[in-house]
Length: 401
Image (cartoon, rainbow, N blue to C red; front, side, top):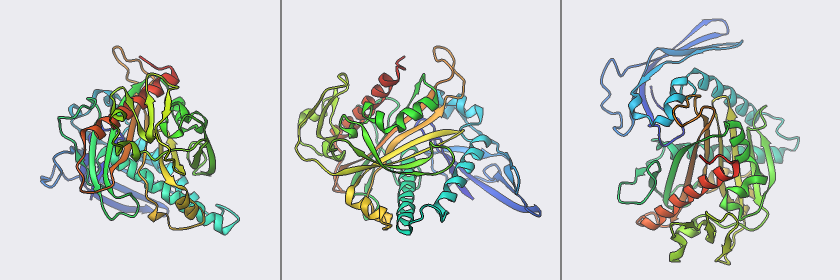
């Protein structure tokens, strides 16, 4: 078998592993599933060179009709991992057994909701909610693939010569003939930072639609209204929501295609056709009358291993179709969002323990022509967007260093 093991951060390489899997029924209602890497047995010349080599030592789980027991072991070259993430990896929360168990528990609850016949007493509403859940799942899967440069999508990493942050990864790809995405050149930009704030507080802040205007330019300076809410488990943090801005919002791609030079100033970014000054939180000046009727689809996920807040602008007519039970596969969207992890409790030096590792990522259509060339201005605009978003989160939570 072949697998990619991911920590949702551009600072941690994707682990590429090939392994043997052995499954056996031990007794009535009990099974064992055991993996072991084959990289030590024979070479693996097909492994992508950009990905991190990893050997899975004998690992596995016992599945029973009662509480489960798990074990998971692997070895890797720690030198390839950014220092911010080494304590987390050592703790086992990043890719160890505790994350495995927590993720399985959350996924089982989510699947139970998706397959439940009690989503609603109204069949039409039930079909609509299932369609909305499937759309949110696709959105989150694409978000994760964009953060870690998964082989699920063919991304091209941007080389040098562009003025971006040291820890910002920028990638591009061409979107052609995919009904679930707008056609054109898609840019993905992601970075990770450490914040002196607990993961739970950070997650609660980012998922709260009433506080969204403190960091999200899409909110256009006003609070969001929750139009629909679907719980995905026992934890209230696991949910899918449909949000609407209290004022009109603009598609994010307009700014990157705008010919107006001052929109690309390094001290201001202008997604949504708004002049947005990062150093003046209240400064917003509309520069375009073209407004669009857009909604925000958001999925939030949380368990003992970490949390996600993923969102994407969606057209109102498309969401009306989805909510009436229509096929969500043809709804075009590009996700952005956050991955939140504990810092592993390994603060050292000037860094204190008990903080969070926050990954911020955006996927944006920078040109509607798939064969178009990527401009330096577009890359710098997205880089500024990431920088401004991080600054605003730090300011709102009073966690400036």
